[in-house]
Image (cartoon, rainbow, N blue to C red; front, side, top):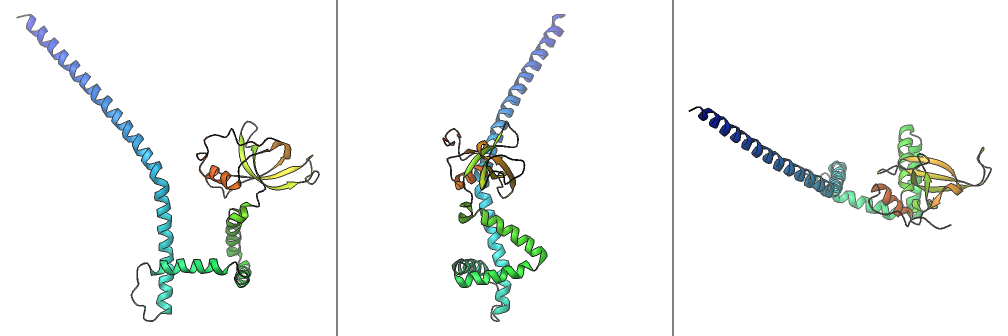
Length: 237
């Protein structure tokens, strides 16, 4: 009779240990499933984000076209009483195509010059327009040709390097306190290359890279993902 309580206690202890082991296995399985779920979710986000962002921006732009040109149609066309979905988008796209066709011509340049003079007389509008125009001009196909070459310079400190664009070659003695030829280098930020830093560095401290300005921009915007290796970029002097 005395052994019954001991046997019962041992049985309960075994059951408790078995339950603890089962709970631990469940926790391990749940933890592994959660880690796999998190990994798959992150991969899915990075895979779909560029396409989703592109679609979102296009949709927003088209909606903006529609919101602008639909009211214009209401005022210009008396019989246009019921809005037609998408008609403003079509007119907006046609308007951009016509501007693209006319702008390079002599008449188009004169019209743009007149509009620019009007905007120049408006303080706030002048600031916004000039800044936006400079950004688009710099990173357009014609603007990229103004970047003489792509270089690697020590920035932001001596132990690190940054990609930059040579915007001007400065002769020796032009800048006080410097000796030898200097380079004016624009170091863009990533992933937004429209902002950055203007650095004046000695020519012998800049390493020329064997890539075009377009390739360098892709590298900067992608945060270095486009090219996996940098070992072959340096030009031999």
